Length: 187
Ligand SMILES: Cc1cc2nc3c(=O)[nH]c(=O)nc-3n(C[C@H](O)[C@H](O)[C@H](O)COP(=O)(O)O)c2cc1C
Image (cartoon, rainbow, N blue to C red; front, side, top):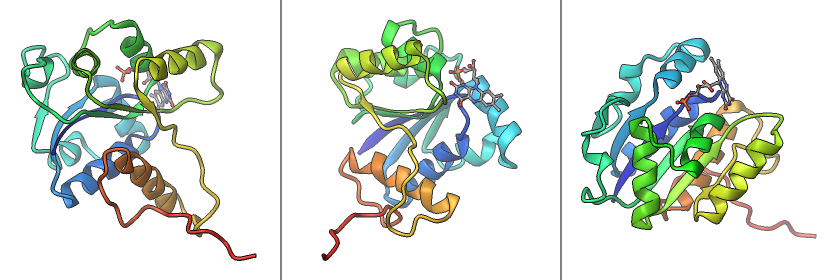
């Protein structure tokens, strides 16, 4: 399986980092594009560097490189995950305003009918954000906001992140041990 991974400048760039780690562990081929704003957010929120992200991917591209392989529908992939997805990138995806490589790769997924999963992160959500998410869902995107989880002893940030990673991977049929599964509760 080959996936395109987009990391945009919403809070929670560490979500994308953990996603890349999980995909590497699962043996999935990843093609990564990190926006300029995501690099800024990475610096604001973590002690990670861009190289820590790119080292986990099989290939990585400059967000300005519109000639990259993932800019074309003739480069076969099994879909794309944008994690986290900023409200600006969400707006770009639903409007088709593909002015960087992440947006172009998402546009390619839509035009080729490939799976596109978005992990939008903002709070509170304006009507513009909500409308854009509804539009994205109508276009066929899967919307997986990084919601808090309160079952399965998810009592640390690390477990919360693992749960979201597991939710995203399950959309692509990729097993992930770190995710929590509800197995029912006896009365
Ligand atoms: C520390 C930090 C946190 C941010 N958090 C968010 C956020 O949670 N959601 C969001 O939509 N934008 C957030 N932004 C703003 C985006 O980075 C900004 O809109 C940027 O233009 C997004 O560009 P991109 O979509 O090309 O990555 C944040 C910016 C910074 C510096």
